[in-house]
Length: 211
Image (cartoon, rainbow, N blue to C red; front, side, top):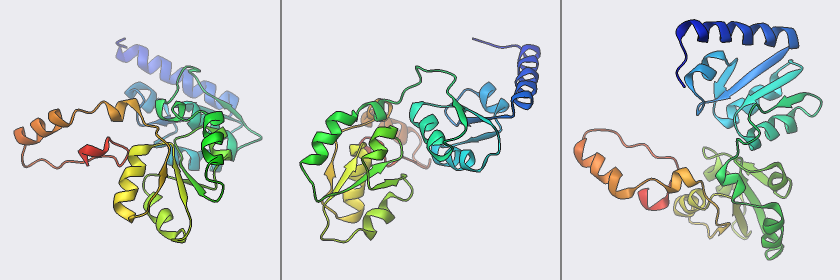
């Protein structure tokens, strides 16, 4: 739905007024629409927004993101009210790791250290020993003693990447993000052939054959 400049300005003004009245802060993920990004107090990835949530003095945190991001903000701010504007805003990666199923999986390896990617539900975080991000996961895995077994969840693509980078034999939960899985290797190769001098940047969470 297109929004006129006048309407956008009016809505933004109303949002700013309401935030001031409620002593609220608006956190928005990079994936949000430009209009929401413009209205946000902080804009970034899930880790950066969690860090800002931990620092805020606002009474209310409005999180323009998905469930696990709002949950993380609540974890670091247990006494504050955290609002998720769209209750249907889920994450296919987080949803691919149901807590009850993961409990049973974890029970098969009682001596393993559980390392999970931050893009998971609060229940999965509670079942974990260490929470990582895509930028520090390699360092964390390398610091775990070689004689320790490691379960890595929920992203099997990030886990496969870590196996390649660290040489560790990780026990992977077979979860993934449907968006990252949907990338076509053939399409990317075709684009690269059309633009041979372009830089190619990929998330470690992308489908492993692309890496």
